[in-house]
Length: 201
Ligand code: VGL
Ligand code: ZN
Image (cartoon, rainbow, N blue to C red; front, side, top):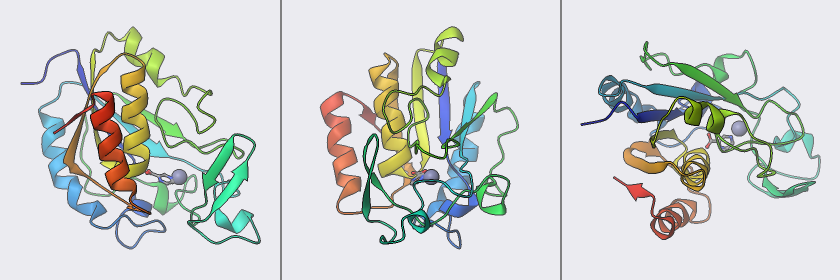
């Protein structure tokens, strides 16, 4: 079914986004067996890993007057503040122990600049700084990007939108995603996909 020019992009299936983690996505661990199975049907798989320095500017702890899930104004615009999560080289930043995709060809880390968050696997939250993934996938000749993982309404959403904007055919398999769902963010993601022609399977 999947072609040689299709790539599966597995987004942020990390301990901190699973139950018991610092920014747990409800049911986040439930997608692991499904993603393992799906990955076996793809020849090409790329993983992303949220990978923050301990003092990352998206952490509410860096903003004394703020709580997690509030907005702060950054030099690039409003940014949701999060509990400290996915700190480089900690257990929380590791992939879920049952994620098993030995043939994954690339792991792209994002959010490693202290002053900018990066939801998307393609562009950081200033919407300008590229991660290099777009160039990599183009140079490899991929035509379709299929997105799964955590969280549906943040990193999966922004990655899928950027993939589509870069000219890839883009599909999101919702059954293999889970949402944080802040203020209707999951519905907003579904609406945005419909408007942009991103296939929601
Ligand atoms: C994510 C919030 C902060 C995600 C990452 O993977 O969706 N969300 N960092
Ligand atoms: Zn993050």
